[in-house]
Length: 241
Figure 1: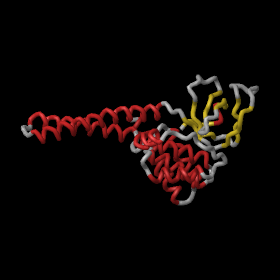
Figure 2: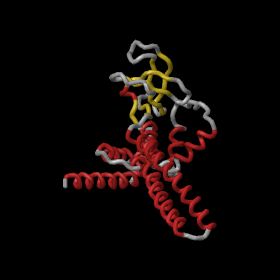
Figure 3: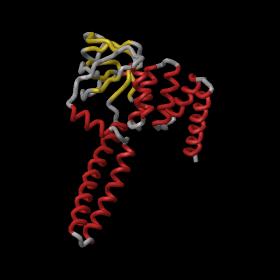
Figure 4: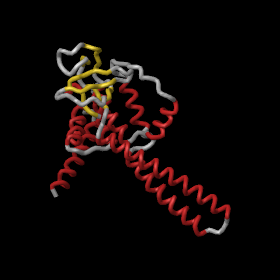
């Protein structure tokens, strides 16, 4: 009952945020959306609306953070992609990414067609279709039909395994995020996890960083930016996507 009451309160806060946004009170709307997020609720629509509210206030780092979270849950949404690109144009750092092999880009493009839930549903549908087609193959007596149903069953079985694997990868990305957005106006990236470390370079709010596999040090985390440069930053300067 307490859980239901809390869910109802969060739903009311979300609707209140939508109302405030429609009225042009973007600061109050963002506060309502943040209340829902802090309450443990997450959805691509919630993060998208929060991103819009922050964008209207020209709080671009917060907007990017929420757009990135929305994109992670629903990468195929055109509005999310469009607004995320617009928000990125407003930040100071324009880091060139390391070129990747075209097959890697193609593979990542396929993987980003759906979120974790979408790939999970696709795996279930593919498994059912593979089973139905195999039954048809087993009971039919026509050679041509046997070839078609067996080949189709094998294809859907391959799709099933790929969808299961991709859903697991997407779920891991959500549960154990490896990316973050810098929220502090200016961050000095150092060569070691302490204030005495050598200054390597500077990043500004809104830039996306990726955690390296180096174990974190209390209060510090080693990060990598799109151009491949790495270094240590204080943990209170960014927020995990």
